[in-house]
Image (cartoon, rainbow, N blue to C red; front, side):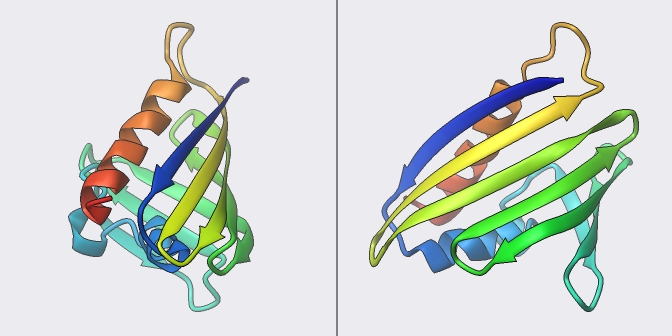
Length: 126
């Protein structure tokens, strides 16, 4: 199991950050996701990735504009992801925790998480 924590700051409302975090195809901000399906209750989701593989998500916590947490499975890779949003008005601090199992010995989950946050930064323009 590999664990990493990454913090990012955005010059926008937490609601906007939350919206993008929970909708990976919104304005195509996640360039690695081509399609996204969610169950009516919002607790199960499938990301159809551009590499042809699917990522299955099971949300364990969804506190609007404050916290999202899920378990995920993509092939042999599985783990948990938690994002905590702090702030209000025009400022958001986002703390992300990623626990991953199944990545190779030299894989760097922190790099993967930082890449996603950079995609988010570009999408938000913040």
